[in-house]
Image 1: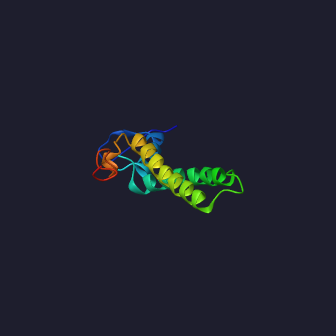
Image 2 (image 1 turned 120 degrees about the vertical axis):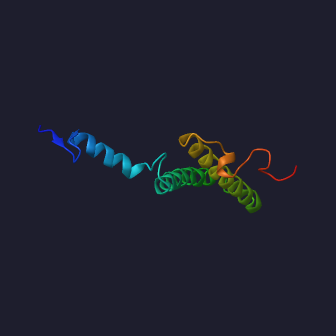
Length: 109
């Protein structure tokens, strides 16, 4: 393979350029780009919501509507909380940095 040089005369390998461009597609100056973070979060939420739907369908058929509603809403909250926690771990951040501080999460209790 022929080695190329840039305008300053430094050698540039084609593989390094491609990997730099690919990395630039996913990462900004310091972290994963916001669009990719959103897509990852959306994929996690969609996957967990599919699991939640299966779980709701496994409830007995004679279950009270109020019980089903409460279980559904509780699981939906858990899905978004778990997805936020997973993204916090992926981004090496805390839940508080995502707007969910542990001490103030449920208001003044």
